[in-house]
Image (cartoon, rainbow, N blue to C red; front, side, top):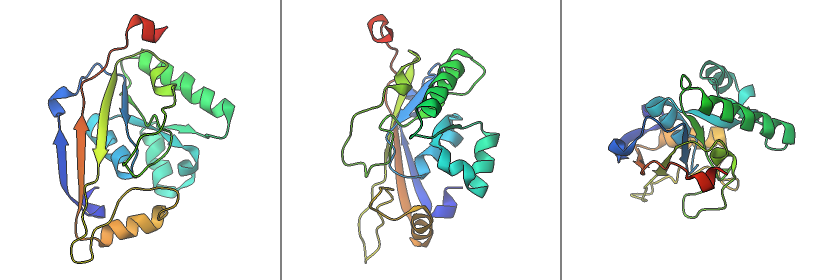
Length: 184
């Protein structure tokens, strides 16, 4: 799947740090690629914008993988996703839930404040960092970050497919078990 959009080079750092007991995976959200990669690598089901449920391929695959669809503008939807997240974290049969705690995509050059949702269940969290190192060579070099001011979904897909190569680094950090004080 990643080859289809030009990802020839995938580097995973710290795979030995992945803790299977973690119920929540948190990662910075740079593009549309890292949710797919984490879904494939850890079976982590992402919390995803409800707008994507309407797209033909993504909506169908999302239903199969039981993604959590959130309408960020609806308090009821956000609460329903938080309830589902808490419920899934309590059931050992479910795969971990993937949450992007910043709540939006950024270009990877800065952090913004985290939303609390990923940490509300009080379960072990597996942090990950996605990086898309790129440089311009002979006029080629696409920043794969998907920001509001940048190219939109279809344009970014086409640009990634037309670029000869894209690189992705995914680094896993040490899993974090919340303390009793943090759970309270």
